[in-house]
Image (cartoon, rainbow, N blue to C red):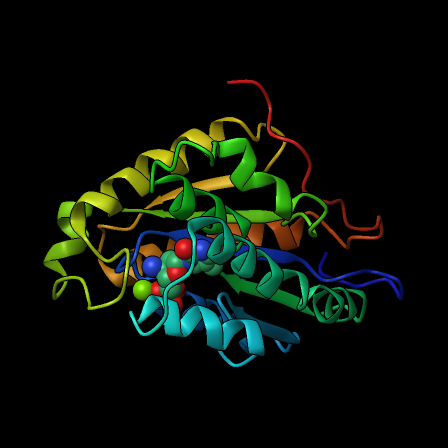
Length: 224
Ligand code: NYM
Ligand code: MG
């Protein structure tokens, strides 16, 4: 086990959750452990604030620019689409790609705005066709417990009421993606316990053997 055939691709692993759920810390711990196995990995965080779209997104999140709900939604999606070729190259080179937020955040944060012209389907559609993760780790925490962690910050969306909606929408969205491999982890547990559960989920994936089939893509939501 763990022996990679020449054409084996790497795993695409996405970590999702509310603000203050511990995603970034856990991504770093996971990457460190993957590196410890002498495996190549790549860490990507969305939004990637360094690109042209990312700078527009950053200005919006920090309250320094206005955008319509639709325009900012599509910018977040474009910020992922412009990274796709790089992700595919890494996966095909056999590297594990760990992604901090993805299309799932993209859909639920926008849908939580309750804009009547932006249904959940509308929000999901621009991300159809993106590489489909082999594993989604949903770091689940209540908005109350997340708020206790030093409080939410100053960025747009970092309000408890919004976060509570986002959490409910994450659960609803995952229920409409039955063929997605989602593992929900109680992110209210101590840091190391969360990390241990994430590591177990990663090991299960890794020990299932090398991946030779090509990657699938995200497709339409199933009926509620
Ligand atoms: N966010 C993130 C969205 O609204 N749509 C998206 O597509 C993505 C990837 O951006 N509050 C929101 C969620 C966060 C904010 O992310 C910035 P982070 O991980 O806090 O830097
Ligand atoms: Mg944040």
